[in-house]
Image (cartoon, rainbow, N blue to C red; front, side, top):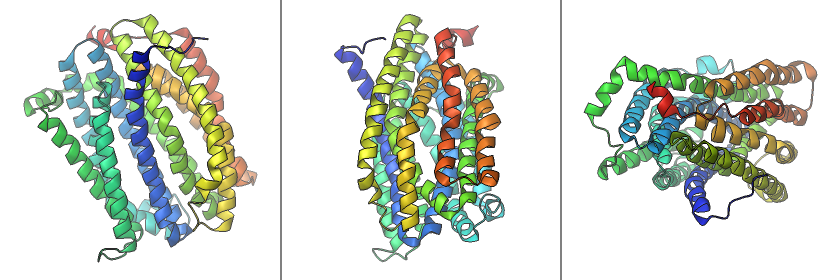
Length: 456
């Protein structure tokens, strides 16, 4: 097994890349938890509604991340090759493609969402509250798409601090507005779930304004002029970007849709089960935050090495990050299990049956999460850093839609299984993907210099 390096410069690079991303994701996850905690006094229906809305928006955030990841992989490799004009062109194309992609969803969420939400949940009160939340936050989808693309591009260049600052300020604004608007403080009316939605929309707008002001105020290389956007409107650069990114976007989209489908199917296991998912999702996201940061650090470092044709360094880096991931995930899983009573005490307004179910669900999460985390590191940090998007797409879609979801649906509708076993089935697909991902990495087929390959 490859030993962990002792070089201070290596660990400093990892910390500078991973920690700001992890902190930003952790803060964002805590914000999601804060939304749930703040509306928990309004009842299980409010918790379920905010949880369902968050899951649907997470589905679109996954789609946004597909485009942003395609952009960041190319920017990382182009920067490793010393070709910054190609980094700028990639950003311009991604912003235009992302805008076109997100407008239909903006309209779908903003115009009468109650017409289709009833297909996803049988509880009319939950549907009404979810529709209210989605219609208010619809514009935030487009704002978030631009934010995600700018953040991914800056991180690929090694600038992780500014996105962290922008995200932290946004979260502070969001929590403050939630406090004021949900409960009606400082002379504002108590808007309940709608107050949480308005807080989210305003916070996203301010976050985007902060990022754009920073980029253009400092005359950063990503302060694109209209002249730099015009070539991106041509079909050829967009087609080149799409040929690389579409498998990635499809992968993210289908994975996100499957992830949301798990949540929607859980609604048919009862409102208590959906309320548990509304609480467990931000807890899961908080746990994943460190490892997403670590995977992104791995992707940037491996991508730069591949862009500079240093393949053996890329191989060594992947082995170091896999070992580090295993050490951390087992340590933090045990720590989370020990801390679970204090974490659950934050949800004092949750009904007793929901609280008991939540406690057991969290234990199952701590036991099984290592499989999901290790797959995530291999996919995000290694395979996608080399542009091995088609293999990941085929494996993800086959396992999730061919095995994981059908078995999960059968357990809910025909199995009569208790919720805890149903929740454990959410980890089945990661168990099934474990060996194919491990073997693919061992064959080294992912080790590609995309800057050279795309120029041929």
